[in-house]
Length: 325
Image 1 (spheres, rainbow, N blue to C red):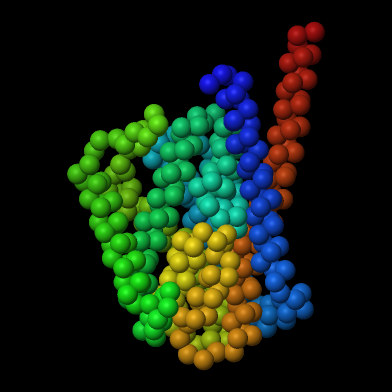
Image 2 (cartoon, rainbow, N blue to C red):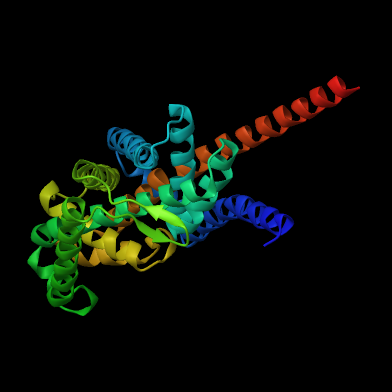
């Protein structure tokens, strides 16, 4: 492959990050356009301000946990980076991938655009993105097992959320976790895929992956829980089981943001009879606080950063040209 071809491919990958940001914004628009503006307003206003504040706080710490995926991935590849950079890359990357779906591709494209500017090689970025993907995957495995025992029995009445199906998913999750932790003890050889070397993490790092990924998902659940408990009397241990099953199946459906899949499953599984309007309000609040607001904030930050980078690059070019004259 010629140098020019490689350069073009790198440019395409780099600019695709902005494409996925646009896709994420469009997906948010699609999600909210399904509802009447007055319905959204009434749904949000029905939630007490105190609960909304707690939901926003949980969302903030949730994205702190998500950004920490990048910190753990940096430790995995043995690189160091200024905290503001990995926080910035993690926040932008996950606010996009949460909405656009296909996290490895959409979030990976954003990271490629940013980390290449910070002198990271493409193979290092691939290793980081892959590692972060496994962090989320194995956290899901752990939480699926937890969710299976916490989910109300009536959720397994039949259909796609039947007890047999969920039991199979739980067994697969347990096997996956067991194999991964076993590999940290007994498999020390690197795995090489297309000249990229992937080392098996240490047992401590694998534990950190499961803990960090679980913290991320649990904090996301609190965003919905704080929006919901003003209207629905449900213990958190029951709620988290419902949330985990709906969330994980929503992610595995590959529908961006689990749009429709998560809401449908959640309303199906949640125990008891509840006013659909209040459930609707809580789910809308969850979508706005955990998906829309971070995307809007990351959009402002990303545009500011891109503008600064362009101005700074222009100044550098002018300075170099003036020194040559």
